[in-house]
Image (cartoon, rainbow, N blue to C red; front, top):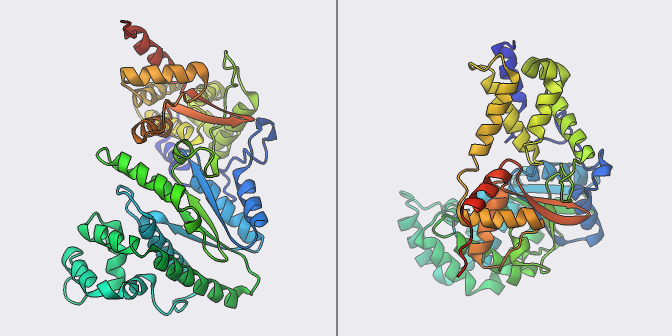
Length: 449
């Protein structure tokens, strides 16, 4: 039987929510070492696009929850830097509010602020003569007094007003000031764009002065895909992001900069054939045929991923002599997401400290049942849609209204629906809920008039 210390180490090595650094011993190179899967390497694709685009470009990168987006972005950063690029990184959630609608003027300001601070972190504090936040208030010179009053009253800074810091804070707050600022900037969008472009160019000149005039620059603006809204305003948020990328895509291009945005994956559904998105897919543990036949290369990759985490010795400590069989049971229930497999394994580790400690098969069964319960209950209308997706292996999206798209996105984000690409693009339901979906549909037949 495993000791508590051994279990604690296994649990730590299975952390599912920690993005892996490039070169991590835990990273399973499914794109480079498992070519038989037929998966295009998204990092190689993005790096090639940046190279071929010349001196500047706009690229969109995305993935549903648990797809490994941040891990792959870190790999992209490493590979580009190895090729001589200067790669700057910023987290969008430090600059925008994920649960509020966004507009192009606000996003431009956030991007400039994020870029300026990323340059300062990398190259020192004296790159720009003034921050974009102070610069913006100066830019709104006819409205500066009213803006400062609004900031002081609504942001709540006591005493002397620290304008730049307060403006950055206000962009992330759900305040009436933010709405006023959006209105002011929207009316002068062209001027704002010119000023933001000039701000980026100043940063480029400073970088080139430090790294050489021919240096190529990439700016990664991560976490923008987390713009989701709340149950009350999710449709408004979806529509606002759609407007930004449908109407202002070229506005998001900056001089001498390759900009990589991580965007909500549902843009694929609301803007088909409009914007090009490199979208991470799930690994297909089964083939797209009626029987869902076993895909051996995918299973081999997942078994390899488990060995990287704790090896055969650790597997034997946790599962005993039949560790290969028990691990395969968990792989078969993860839906093709490495993160979900890690969660199942972690739950199994925890259950090894309970009354099930001496029965590895029972621990695995309980972990699988607990994972299944996380999906339940399945609403009748959801079950009907999920059943059709499983039958046809397509989304069968009836329209691109915000409400419908958000419903499908929830399926994909919680992994009730899985997105695959191996040659063709296809979808399927999660193996843990197929029987539950079928049972709900059978018990609630569609009433015919």
